[in-house]
Each structure stands twice: as structure tokens, then as C-alpha cells.
Image: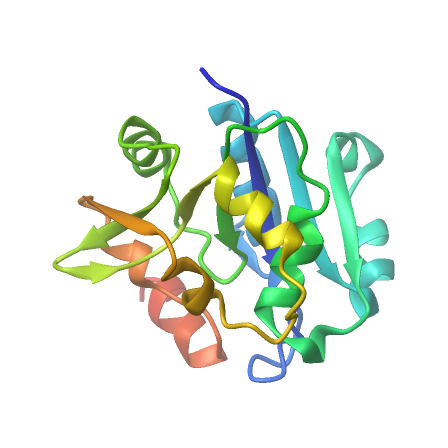
Length: 198
């Protein structure tokens, strides 16, 4: 398997939710961040890059053990107001010797190994790969090294990620996981996906 990295984008202020999303409970044993990191570790990503909001640094160190954080490259975003592309660029700047890199949003912890494998199986060195469920695109996406290099060189930090990706070919991959479409942005979203049985 070629060298793969993952950039986990978790630098938002979580204003709509009211509490930092990386630390939301995915199940009784793990948070969103733990679930996502464990998945990519087991899948074989050589480097896990976490772009975190600077304001949440103390929570990160208080919640997680040194053993969990070891092997994770944590990049603190001090300008979350600049948007997602700036976070992506911070993460991309830490990517090295990688053939492909997954881009994983913290607000969708439902990624599974089957989806990651399908994206990897359809990889191309001049296109990005996006999962699709019922003709709707979801996350994560898989970027080849050429796009990561383009992100590193881009000087317009206000660029929309979609605008940058529009410069490249896109490969869509049908998956049977409808939760690739999910975004946990509010307590209501969380309740929908994690409602407890009566």
C-alpha cells in the first residue's frame, strides 16, 4: 500500500453546537476524535495530522493520554476565522512523502474502513476521489500528492476548497454508507444521529 496520510479538520469554533465537536461522545467508550483517529490508524495511514482550534488545546491535553496523542501531529490553528481552506493548508504543510491524503472533517465521525478502501481502490494521481450516496457527494475525500502540493503553494488563504478542487478531475465512488452525508453541526443534528432508544 502506498504512503497515505490523513488531515483531520477540527479547528472550528463550534459556535452552533456550543461545545467543541472533537470531544463529543461517539459511543460510551470514545469521542469523535478517538473514533476517527483509531479508524485511520487501523487502516494504515502513516501520518495523522490534526488541525485543532488553538482555544481547545488545553482540553485536548487534559482529555487524552500521551499514548493516544503519540504519533498524531497536532497543528494549532490560531485563526479559525479564516475558514476551512486555511486549516487545510496548515495541515497540508505538514504532509511529507505521501502519495495520497484523506481529508476528514471532525463533524462526520461515521467514516468506515469500507469507504476508505473504496476511495483508495479508485485512486488516480491526477484526480481527487469523492464518495457518493444516491448521487450526493460526501466525506471524506482522497487527494493525490499533486493536489496536496498545489494546496501548499496556494497563496490565497481565502480560497474556497471547492474552487481549488475544480481545477482537477473528480472521480466519484458509490458507497452504501448513507452517513457519509452527515454533518454534526448542532445539538439537534447530534440528537438525530445519536438518539438513545426509549
